[in-house]
Length: 73
Image 1 (cartoon, rainbow, N blue to C red):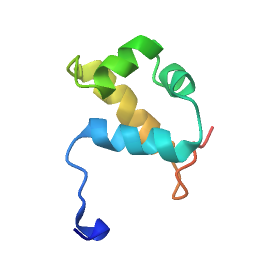
Image 2 (cartoon, rainbow, N blue to C red; image 1 turned 135 degrees about the horizontal axis):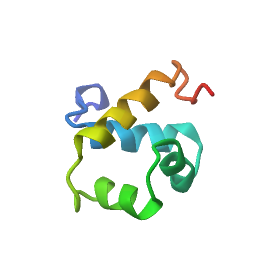
Image 3 (cartoon, rainbow, N blue to C red; image 1 turned 90 degrees about the vertical axis):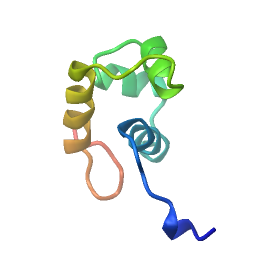
């Protein structure tokens, strides 16, 4: 499989990539998303479905990301 064939299919996958590339700890990303670290863990592990409000928080976080994958504060 060629890595260029990999496509992001869900917001959870995109969020996982953003967390990895940001260089920030998961609890720091949870703070930026206005949620607890345990809730974020449950979402990332597909134990809890995304709520509409949490999706809005993710979208707002994505809007603060520049091309390098770093959060713009």
